[in-house]
Amino acid sequence: MKKLWIWLPVLIIAGSIFISSSIPYDKQNIQPLLRQYVDKDFFIRWFSWVNFMYGKKEISIANLGVPAFLEFFIRKGAHFISYFVLGFLLSRVLRAFKLKGWRNALLALFLAVLYASSDELHQAFTASRNGMILDVWLDGAGAACGIGVMMSSARTRRNGMRTDKG
Image (cartoon, rainbow, N blue to C red):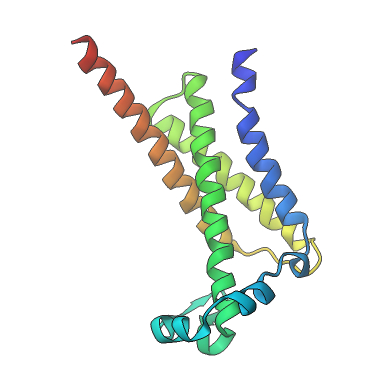
């Protein structure tokens, strides 16, 4: 029974991602809030040089304006962090089921990317949202980092136990 409870945090983060993806963009738009509270001149002064393509969209202050530019990074940061946590938790669950090492990392990453793919597909059918393969890559990178942290912390704990006993 204890091994079933370890799935609960995974289900909570996966459910949170699903719910977030179900909300139309206009209900999540934080640009009005950013317009109200952010010092535009600061961001123009320090970040006007940032310019790159994300999919078919140019990401720059000149193209988007400060609020949309900031919102882009906040939204993509949320992607990365959500999947970092999901990857970490999936690796933790697989470890509890005695799957360790590269097999753990590979399966956890596969599951996270599979979920990210299904999430982007889900967004494609949500009003005023769209799914992007680039977001799957970003989610996968977040998951890989979370898995790396989990495996590194497990290795550190294991090596610490050897030192304490030795």
